[in-house]
Amino acid sequence: MTLSELDTSQAFVGLLPPGSVIDKSGELVVAGCRLSDLAAAYGTPLYVVDEEALRAQARAFVQAFRSRWANSRVVFASKAFPCTAGYHMMAEEGLGVDVAGPGELAMALKGGVDPALVVLHGNAKSSDEISMAVEAGVGTIVVDNFDDIDRLENMVRSEQAVLVRVVPGVRPDTHAAVSTGHTGSKFGLPTADARRAIARLRASSHLRLDGLHIHIGSQILSVEPFARAIEAIADLGDFDVYDLGGGLGVRYTYGEEPPSVQEWIDALVGAARSHLPSGAQLLIEPGRSMVARSGVTLYRVISVKHGEPTFVAVDGGMGDNLEVSLYGQRFEASVVNRVRGGKSVDLVGRHCESGDRVIAGVRLDSPAPGDVVVVAVTGAYCFTMANNYNGSLRPAVVFCRDGTAQVRVRRETLEDLLDRDVLGR
Ligand code: LLP
Image (tube, rainbow, N blue to C red; front, side, top):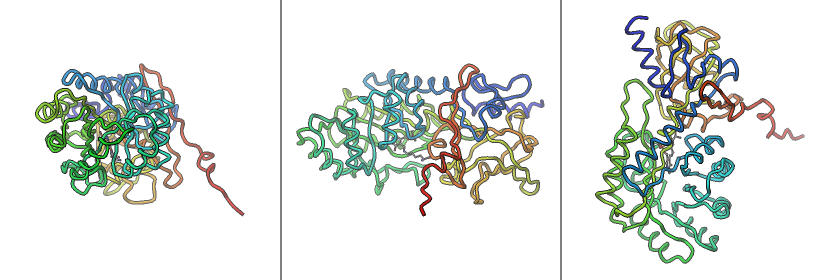
């Protein structure tokens, strides 16, 4: 291997879960498991999660937060990776989870999350959903609108803790579709309305207003807007609890340098020290930054069409990764047993649209049909938004640890696909 080949391969390994290596035969190994073996054993496309890396990240968040603000809680934004085994892992690590809707709540409960540590979100919570949450004993319900308050007041018979979601009027530099804290956002209440909601909740007999919630968006690569958002809610009064949301961006490509977990929490806590009551409890809700790097996706190359560009077509695509088509997200990839990179190709999916490009312009070493390709940093929102476009079957999820892999979500089957359809006569 030349020095630059070495550089490329080490750069790629640097995007994989910490501890990933290239073994003596040049094969990529994650959590002690050879990626080519996983593809052979479990099929492709396949989501692979490094369990220890995920647990370490959960602990890193808790430790960084607790050491800077003792009265603090980390709540995993489970929409980033909503699988029952993932909820279970978070519960084991002592984290809470945020859920948006009955599906995520059901998985959290099945995964053994203490309902008291669950935070329920949503800008369109139905009565059934609120009733399910209240009956399950969900610790915190985040009020997004006045209809939430009406429904809760009709339903709650003993006491229910709530937070009010406030629009802080901050627009971070991120994709418009995942920006949520700006004036005009569909989530939460602008400050004038928030004041009315606060007054109403303070007068309520069964609803206990604990504090405020903000969440300004996702994949945010600078800490400054987070601090501004905290400042923006400071004059709404003094509260016991402030949930500061998620949004920390992650490194998908070689060039990106997102803030570290510690830098992000430094910024949040710094702003809280300046603007919020010192005795308050602080919550954060990291999603993407909790899970993204722990996960990779494996594909099998089906066809290579040489030309300008060369198309390397794999057996997945926008059925298992919508980040590219919806948000223009760039990823990096490698053949699992030839990591040094090579000629630039377009890695494309199997779905019937030209937008189904997994990565436009990625250096792969002599990709050929049958090769296994790994795409890095797919642990967040890819499994979440997997779909059946072109009848694709949603992939399995395997958790790997110390060289052992276990299926945590089985691959969808054709029977699953047909099961819900009613032919009619
Ligand atoms: N808290 C709330 C209330 C949220 O709505 C979200 C994400 C989070 C926390 C976690 O944000 P994170 O730390 O993951 O940035 N479907 C998009 C992502 C949408 C994020 C929605 N809310 C995607 O695939 O990229």
